[in-house]
Image (cartoon, rainbow, N blue to C red; front, side):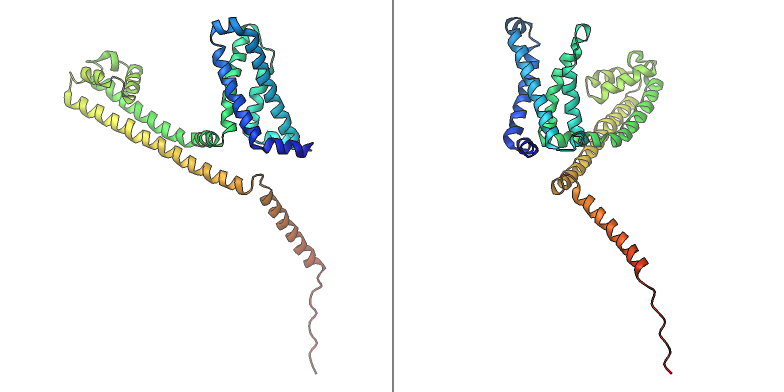
Length: 275
């Protein structure tokens, strides 16, 4: 039974079938937003949704069985935990005012494509790994926003109170400028007080915020993707990490044998002097 479950879970047709079911779940979630379709084919849509959920449950059961006597090893993989939580939420008897939570869980089933497709899994893993480094880049960006906001209030607050009248409005204006959304309108209003100062202010902020910061974010993500590639290559060479564990056990056993031999081996006797 365990061997059969391992063969089914590891087969390509099973993997492809799960991807198709996930796509069908996404299509069903989109169709259910159409009230006309729900009114005309409500029972059929509910039956298909129940069938999709049943397939997901069978997939989880097969993966648990494939782990043999250690089914809890299934939860050692974070992606498996993610799949299990989504399916568990769909099984909750949520109704009434909380029905939107159940519908949201049905939409989240489409995120299972991340676990089903290794390339997507690598991209998401790289993004997650880059969060720590992105925090420092975001902190640097926040400091730059704060400095330029204070400068904007002092330079253009009296002339353009709408965009730079307060620190909050200046921060929102800078966010609009960094997205390059109609920034020229803000610049046209601000340059009425000091054209040269406004030009230097806007040009330096756009260069620092849009060019340099964007490149920093891209660099952090690319570095994380390189690390993810290295981790995936290591997992392909030793998927379960058993080789490293076995080597560690052998090293410990050799060290214990050396200590035992050192205790059992008698000390060398001093040689008698020849007469």
